Structures are given as structure tokens and as C-alpha cells.
Length: 136
Image 1 (spheres, rainbow, N blue to C red):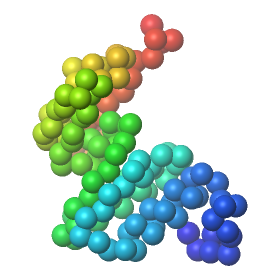
Image 2 (image 1 turned 30 degrees about the vertical axis):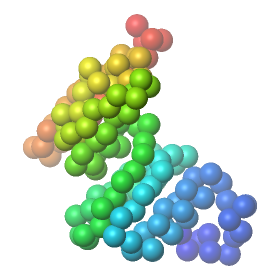
Image 3 (image 1 turned 90 degrees about the vertical axis):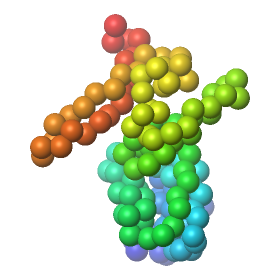
Image 4 (image 1 turned 120 degrees about the vertical axis):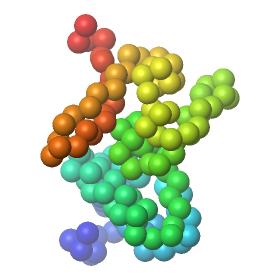
């Protein structure tokens, strides 16, 4: 981020602004961090960086981190627990690996969602993908 230090905030791209705001939240070192879509407006590499930092903060500190996302894979990657808020004001809350399933997500987004697992370095890595109607 040091390459941005001499630029005004208003001259930054949406992704650069998002990274600056995320860095500011981390620098505050509060006991509870509330992050509103911390990976929005970021390319895939920077999404990975932000999610990796969230996981590191979670594992290396006593801080609690609460974040919103419209990307279920982000919650699946780093969140212990997930709260899904539905349009009818009902909700589902529990362990992320249990709550983020085909039934809950397909119902929430009204699209076909599938859970998949990838074998990476002898670990089963869960993921979620949307089946786009253009693919059928």
C-alpha cells in the first residue's frame, strides 16, 4: 500500500479505496471489527489477500470480526459462523460449513447453487458455485 501514500483518497480506484479502508480498520486494533463487504470492488488476487488477512487476524488475536458479504465463498473460506438473513426476515445461523449449503443459498438468491469440494494438497477444500442459466 506504500505506493498509494502520496495520492489523495478521492483519486484512488474503488479497489484501492477498499484496501485503504481495510488497512485503516486493521490499524485500529479494536476488540471487535465490523467490516462491510471488505472484498467488494477487489480483483481476485486482492480478495484472496483480504480474506487471508481476516483469517490471520482471527487466528492471531482475541479480536472478533463480523463482516457482511454477498459472496458465500468468502464466508465459507474464513468464517466460523454464518448468519443468512432472508427477505421474509427469517434467518439461518450456525456453523458456516453447515449453513452455506445448496438449499439455503438457492432459496436465498433464487438461483441454482452447488457445493463442490476440491482435493488440494491432500485437503478437501469446500467451495460454492452458481450455475448460470446461460450454461444450461
